[in-house]
Length: 471
Image 1 (cartoon, rainbow, N blue to C red):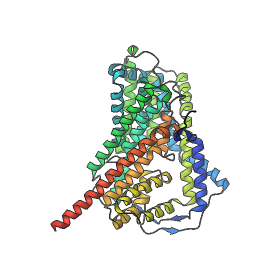
Image 2 (tube, rainbow, N blue to C red):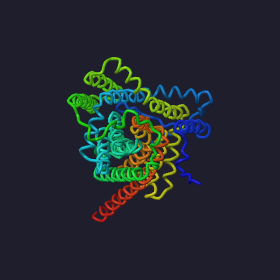
Image 3 (cartoon, rainbow, N blue to C red):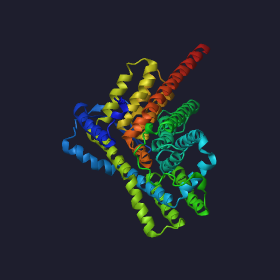
Image 4 (cartoon, rainbow, N blue to C red):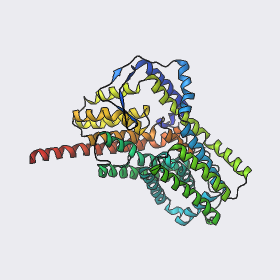
């Protein structure tokens, strides 16, 4: 008899999210409603430490549970549309053969005998994009990894590991993440992005392990294709259609690629200089779609048919984004997010120093499933965690590092994170298959991060001891 592994029992993504929706609904009957008082500072609501109080319970009824589903789609509409617009743009570019020809030429010149090196390099490239560019801003680049992965003999799950995994780790553990580290340092009144050396070492170590894991997976499925988690996934339009030796890049292909690069440049400029976000990115995607279609010589009917075909490919992922956002809506309706944060912080007071630092990361990981926004979680929890850290003997820098680790690593497996679901949809990888692939990475990287936390605590205590001795 064939042995059934635990990860093979992971339910379908839709079933999994619905079970979480039911679970959160039940929690509103078990967990008391409560809230912290908040103060508006520079346009952001920040929690006031010590202001938690119980409020009248607001349990969610059967009808309201289902009502929260369309409300979730309403709240997630911007992220859902960026999935559609990114998918449409990639579909039109794929129709012009620019991406296929570019990838085919690249793999032909590199050679499949160097495919493992290519996987390592691409993992670090996508990781760097996460570190320096952001998260959802990279959504348009995710499908390129799918084409490259298939060309190298991998599958779509490997493509997600190379791109989605690397972007998520790079962004989550970035030493210059403005949404977590930046806000944390501002709340903690620390020099912006201080402690960057330790954070950089952690981020590089995590990406190195992910690169090793991706190569190991590629070797595994190369040796036996039956080991592929990507079996049965739709590869239409992204698999190379001819031998590598037949590929070359035409002038028209270069023009299409140039239009795409100009669009990315406009997005980066807008994000860093004009405060652009999801809607502006979607608008640029649509502009690039029209430009590349015209440059590629496509007629109106051809563009229209390609648009609808591309929408069909990414529609399941867009649906999952809205469905996952239902959980956030339920938490807000039930008023239990602050209660969970408060009681987790109270538990930390009872732990030994080193365990409290690790426990703080674990608690932030739990909270992240209910508050999947990095900046939102920072504003909701750090005003509570920073004073608590000082009470139990942790520096503000260490507390912020613990917060970043808990938030950043749990993003790899967070079904309520719209950006993760959106990028997985661009690789056509369902959440259940992704969890089977990435869960070991999340565990190992968290254990690695725990070592860095212990180093941070030990270093600050050593410095305090030496300073006291010098005095």
